[in-house]
Amino acid sequence: MNKILIAFLFFPLILFAQSSKGETDAFLILKKANESYKLKKFEEAKTNYLSLIKNYPSSKYVPYALYVLSSIETEYPKILEYLFIIEEKYPDFEYWTNSVEKLGEIFYVMGRYEESLANYLKINTDNALYMQSLLLANKKDYKTSLEVINKLLSQTVDNYLVYKTIMLKIKIFFEIKKYDEILSLFQLSTKLIAYANDSGARLLFYVGKYYFIRTDIEKNYEKSLYAFSLLKRKFPLSLESSLANNYLTVLKNNKIEKEEIIGWLASTFQEVVDVPYRGEITTTIEKQEKKVENKMDKIEGAIGKAIKTEIIEYVIRIGEYKDLSVANMVAMDIGKQKKDIPIGVFFRDDKYYAEVRGIKDLNIAKNYAKEIKSLGYDDTRIIEIYKITEYTE
Image 1 (cartoon, rainbow, N blue to C red):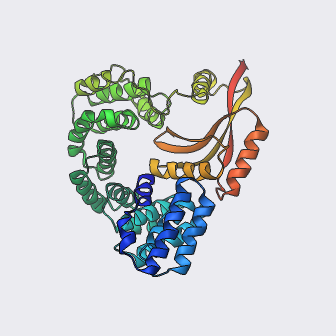
Image 2 (image 1 turned 90 degrees about the vertical axis):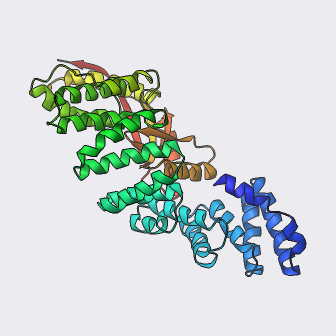
Image 3 (image 1 turned 180 degrees about the vertical axis):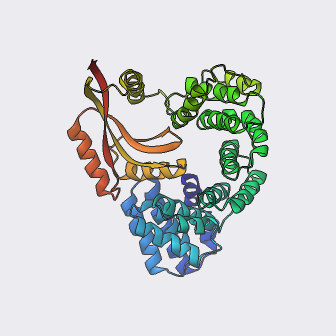
């Protein structure tokens, strides 16, 4: 989005010479507003953009002013107002598609999925097609979702998006029990593993699930055990690792103890042995959580044992999102208004989290949370991260 804004901030000066007096005056206001924007004097820029819209409502520069205002504004009602005007009144505006896509993103963040989908359906960008397929799948309209997925895969050159889309396609095939077509998607995914935003955790889970289901395949349970075990060895803190536990319990109860190596899977993951799982053990919080898990395994179900814990830090969680662009938009919105709050986006458990981490003092955490809530993020909450310091029989 910023690249688009920068591009039009240098709107060709040749237009200036060709304009009428009214357009000349409007252009000068736009130029002044753009200069303020580039200097990050957002209130000054906002005043000039609004002046242009008010005094020259018929100017061809109005949609540009509206578009930048939608970026400067921090309140969703105002952002939506500006974008709606562009959508309805300026279909020939060169950033009309971007405006509609932004509407889809905002409605998605707000949890208004039907309206989000309605906007994404109006455009055919790569991201819009992915969001269409995701939202349609969530509605269980798998047929239409697959049609959109195939369209996306035929047009995009973004390998990161290709991988993510294939994972969605595999998920849908599981839902509709189209198992015969899943194996070829697995093998295609292995060629794109370098573009996996989770380094392949979801793929390993799906492979384990696939062989668990496919009782018509020789040594299917042993292959399932291999895939799930590989998942737990590589990505122990992932959501996929937790989901694998139920399958592993069934395999254990049925005396399936020997792993059957899956050649193509083994060759894929030996190439990325040292690639960290994004969201695995990369922060102090997650390292401590792993230690907690290890100790909890020893005391799980032990009634009457005394456990002592201590808080090691506080995390402020603003929200969790399925799409990175949405999480980034939330983080940027807060960061723009509260520059002193060290907010970040973290990937874990197949979701993106907008969080402030590493806070040692509860009062500081409360103050940050209060500031963030004042911006309209009412679901913001403080999470206490514990470690077990002692347990006794």
